[in-house]
Amino acid sequence: MSHVTPDLSSLITVLAQPNFIESQSDIDNKQFVFSYTITISNCSDEKVQLLSRRWLITDANGEITTVEGDGVVGQQPVIGPGKQYTYTSGSIFKTPLGIMQGQYHLIDSNNRPFSIEIPLFRLSVPNLLN
Picture: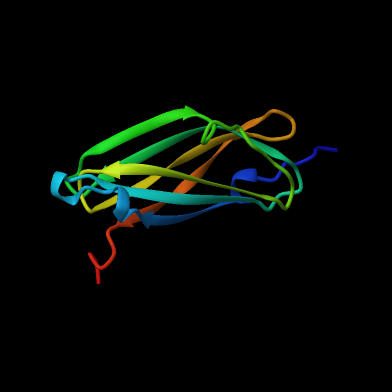
């Protein structure tokens, strides 16, 4: 009898909440500071661990920056079944508008690697887009 492992990548969801930080931005010098809060929800019945991330960051001028590294905010969190992990990080743009997207690389409870997409989200100075 073979055991079929469910596709964990479809059972892990990512929600991003961006925020413009006006007090840290310097608009005259084209420095627009944004924070973003990410919530990763594990809707599977097994624990997973986030090992690394890859971001594709694009500003309104079309300039693309790729950021890769271990974990998130210095951690490689283990997310139990039915649990969530939330963290806040930030990015500085040269334009008042940008987008971010990427992937998280994880392992399941049997140390099998898999990846999940970080859906594209927009970072924008308030009232820039109506």
